[in-house]
Image (cartoon, rainbow, N blue to C red; front, side):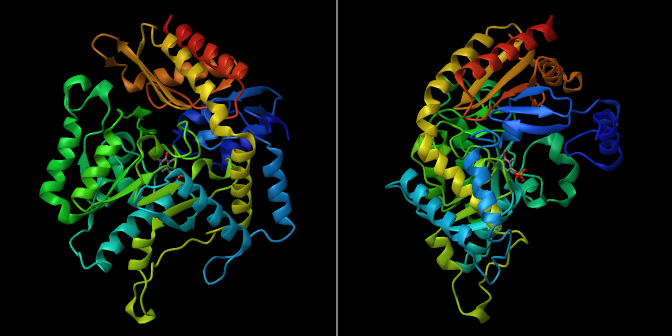
Length: 455
Ligand SMILES: *Cc1c(COP(=O)(O)O)cnc(C)c1O
């Protein structure tokens, strides 16, 4: 089909996510036809560098032979059967593999994550975590622990439970009347500290705020849900070192569970397999999705401890069952892709190979930070954000209506790089497998695009 014809059909039949369709109707959309490594090809035959890993899901690159083969091989057996009342081989094998990896990553730390609950995307993984934490306390006889604590600028997905623990006004405020009430704490984002402190002298005042909430309300709070180390959709807000450890200690002291939403940070993104490893913190529940199948198939897991799992055990008649599940839970094709994805981590030493590229990224970012319109650059591993500001000294942001981030992205697109900004924050988050040359090309283009938009 010709490109023009496809674009017309798209506009006629598709409603795109997070997209003002009035604007879309006036644009000439890029229609992707093919991928290879960290590049995408459109229907006109033009190649682009995939600078945001197809929305943060791709790790080892597109058309990765081992994963292609794993899915094809699984198709020869079965594409899907349910985990409700049945089991399947890829789901079993992947759960075992993943728990081994988790045990290795969190060696010697408590709590012990041990049971895998499957679903299909990050939002559902979060819903599962919230419902598990809530119901756990009911089984423990703590019937008042019905609420949650979450952070300002948090993003945990778009389903209503996930939105309830979210904190991005522009996305979430419309739905406020539909949401359950939660406690909110300031985000530990030092460049724009909500408490107006300087990191050098703040003694973690933001942890102090959490302690205040726990002191007054811990008997009402089942869990504190966080995106460890990087609040991604909130603008790639990178936490100061020590904050997560402080959170774990407070959760322990006040008997509140810690849910780590590692949907964006998991699978090597931050330079370790899981972000929590950076601070030797083990959560009570971890949510994983995005990178899990290398962006091939929708899959997510919520992993809980034996302590949580055991609280749900009882006679059938006691109704302690976890009444939750999805049609595609434990999908064999997706699990086959996930197994192959983990195998590549081992075979290619992905995390070790990543370290020099992270160093390069940091050098290139610090170069970009010198531009007059760049207020702050931040990264953790292969996740990075470049915040554009109207006034570097006062940190005055560009009005969001100016779409500065999009202007840079549109410019980069003309230069052959596909990006998706978060407001005024340029996101650089390529597949972990990106080559040094391509990473340099990506950073050159990013810098040039920022400069040409500002000129
Ligand atoms: C993307 C994301 C989600 C939601 O995942 P979906 O698969 O889009 O539902 C949840 N939490 C975090 C931290 C995310 O980045």
